[in-house]
Image (cartoon, rainbow, N blue to C red):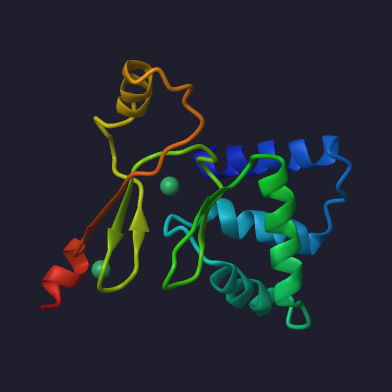
Length: 146
Ligand code: ZN
Ligand code: MN
C-alpha cells in the first residue's frame, strides 16, 4: 500500500474517533490532501474537489482543514503574500523547499536539519514547541524552462 493510502486510512480512523462523519466529500478532501505532494492551498483542494462534487463550496474545504488543524493532523504553512499551504502527510514541523517562480513546495528527500531545532532550543534553555525552516530557490523544472 502506498504511503498516502496508509495516511488516508489513518486520518479516516482518527476523524471517526473524533466523532466526525466521513461523507464522500470529506473523504475526497482527505484523499486530495494526502495524495498531493505539492502542499496544496485550500483553493487548490477546492478546484480538484469540484471535478467530483460540482456543487461543493470552499467553506467545506476550510471546515475540514480547521478540524484537522484542531486535531494536529495537518501542517499549515502560512504566507504573508500568498495562500496558506497544507501538508496532510507530515503534520509536524519540517524543512520545506519553496520555488519562488512556480510556487511549488516540496519536502526534501532528507534533511540534516531535522534535529537542529531541538539542539538549538536545548542549548538556549528553551522548551521546543515548534519551528519553521523554509529554503527558497528556483526548482529544477523552472531552471530547465529558462
Ligand atoms: Zn518552480
Ligand atoms: Mn511538507
